[in-house]
Length: 93
Image (cartoon, rainbow, N blue to C red; front, side):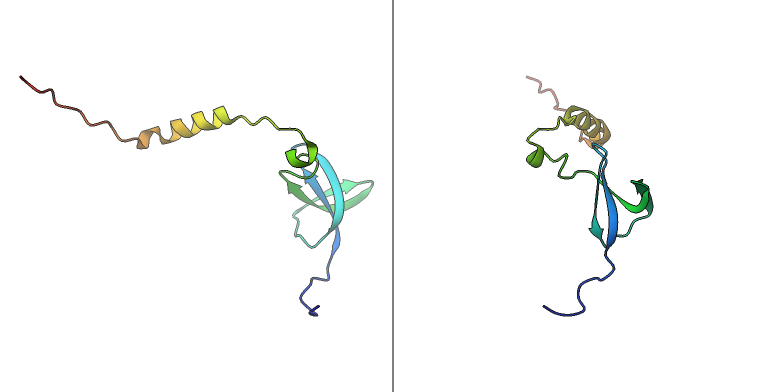
């Protein structure tokens, strides 16, 4: 293995799953701006949108996502860019 290519500043970091508020500790070199106190000790905090405790693959449960609201929001946002249908001239006979 090549020397000098791996970081040496590993430290304990708290990772928090924001979807279910699960917190777990592990070593990491990730930079963190916030901290979290766990068992009386303060750790750098990394926020996650999904983790092993909330991912459907690992939990076996599907999470209901409100896609209808997203679709309506998308349609209303881009409705102003919709091209107007060409007006057909009535043919006289």
